[in-house]
Amino acid sequence: MFFKKVTKNIETPRGKVIPFLNQKGGVGKTTMCFNSAHALAQKGKRVLCIDMDPQANLSLLFGVDTSETDQYSIHQLLVNSVRELKSLHSVCLVDDVIVEGEVDIIPAGQELSGFELTMAAISSPRQLILKKFLEKNDLLNRYDYILLDCPPTLGLLVVNAICAGHGVIVPFRPDDFSKKGLNHFYDMLEDVQDMGIVDVPEILAHVPNLVDNRRKVEEQDLHEIKEMIGERLGEDRVVNPFYNRAQLVKSQASKKSVFDYSSKEYSHLHQQFHEIADIIETWNAN
Image (cartoon, rainbow, N blue to C red; front, top):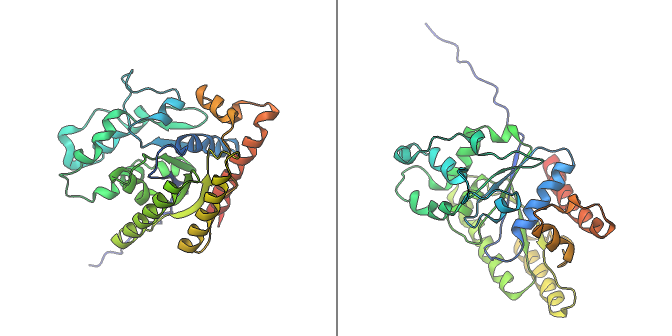
């Protein structure tokens, strides 16, 4: 007797994962991720942010401090997703950890700094832990976009973000250190591509951030970085600079997005973050 093989029509999840990456600290990744998420939410999209940085600054912007509460974090969820670490599992589900709001957040905590050590002994692919966690919990069908705020390193957390990502946003400051850091970042993307286990995410935009327009040297550095990006990638994909505005500092200090302010002095920032959201939306539609 022969049995007819039944094949299920498995639809590709509609959600996209977008890491905000730069190995250099102090370039405004967290603020860029936070406000871009709210810009997408303004367009009616369902957005989840995941804080992948042990410093947990994105979590704090959302008003979540795991060090002062019993709130679980992304670390416990990732550990729980690895069968080999059953002895370390916590009694928590993803919905116990997601903090809901206009934009939802899975927070981070200091324990995430031990992620690489915790995963050192497992035999399953360590680079795919985050990717498998997102798939297992069907988060790519629950959300239109999942934005990742990543630490300023090129360690295992960032490799996981790259392997889970579909498109990447790269904030940077126009200085000599950024040129070196961006080249190291491109080298890492090539290393991930050479692994052959996932498709390397597309670079959606380079975002010059915290630019001081009073310093002429930054204009020269920005020009050189654009040329370097063009030579390395074939095109620059550098958006208009985000200047170091007092309004951005004020909103961050108040733990609010720029869209929480309706005054005219914030209108330019509204426009710029909507442009980032438009880049993401246009790319996703193609």
